[in-house]
Amino acid sequence: MNKFILILIFIFIGVSARLLPHFPNATPLMAIGLFGGAYLSRKLSFAAPVAIMLVSDAIIGFYDLKLMVFVYFSLLMPIFLGFLIKKNKKWGNIFILSIVASFSFFLITNFAVWAFYPWYSRDLAGLVNCYLMALPFFRNALFGDLFYVAVFFGAYKTAESIVKHKNFSRRNYGYLN
Image (cartoon, rainbow, N blue to C red; front, top):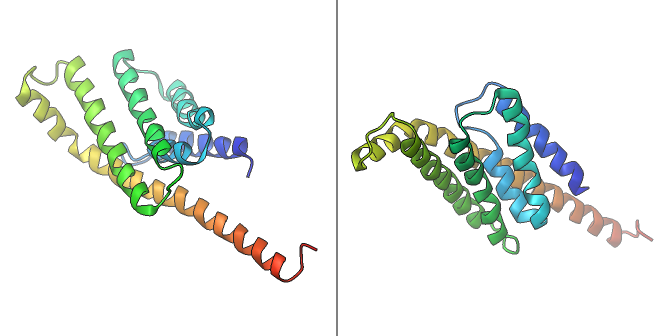
């Protein structure tokens, strides 16, 4: 499949998922970033997540720039994690890095909420309270991330397997001659 078309499909899925009703924080962004880092070139892997955020934020409405910087940075983390499995895309590695990506997004963005907004006291108790209040969102994000990772990586691996099988069958039965 043409990688440009794949990126456009991911952008459509990502923007739609952010705009349509969904569980809070359960979007395919992390999975798209991890997939892009694992399968696309370094340059192309950033295209879909950044485009999804810019397009959907332009529609939904941009918010506080300080927090946006942390959110956008956190959504780039899965791409870098995907680079780590470029040559070894085993399900165990994919699963572990999905959890790491979800957890890093949770830690980074909620730290920013604690640091920039007056909702929590500026001490360890306030930071812990901030993280505790965000746990329901983390649960949704983690389940959503694992679901979308399974769908994207599973669909790609299935399609890859079908193509290999068809090519093998054609070669063995003389269809390519």
